[in-house]
Image (cartoon, rainbow, N blue to C red; front, side):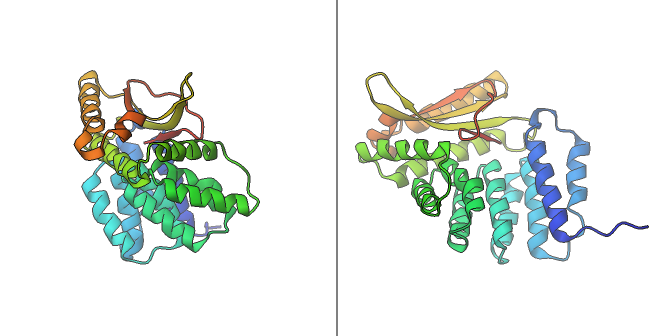
Length: 269
């Protein structure tokens, strides 16, 4: 008895799940695994939307960001569904494209504001994109719906309070997060075997003050890490661009190890 062919949704779900598993094994990716991902995505060639999804998944794993961005443009111009937008928002984060992730999350939130499963699964996308406004809206909506508190809620609120106390616009913080991702993108372009993990948190000091800390963990070689550290130091210290207050309340740290972070704190990329 022959097997029933997989539906488009089944093929896509399998490919998305597999790409996430590959993310967790960046340091040991093989050509065979990349080929298997490509095979999971065959059969979409006649459909512009699905072909763009296939191209993005492969480009993200291969860290071919030019190809990813090109496919993303096609994707956005072909009326993607809610489910596809949610999935590609996560993929965009892995591709260090927080603006795309944030914009897609905004669209999804407007489509399904009362979907608790959406809130549980994707509030962290808004957080790691640096979009504190969207993050706050999603948290508020979830709680009004009777949803559960998440550990991320407290951290996001503390971050907003830190910015408000120093009268730093949330949009400026978001821009900083985007530029951090842009520099990481440049650092790991076409380096498929380099692991990067981000931790965005609020650190409380003994004197009662708080500051926002963005940590970048990577297993790159020492020279590459030193260069990335210099890039981040130069970025955060540019007072002409950021003013004096944002650099005073935010730190960007480059680390040479991949930690085991809690669900609310880490982004594997």
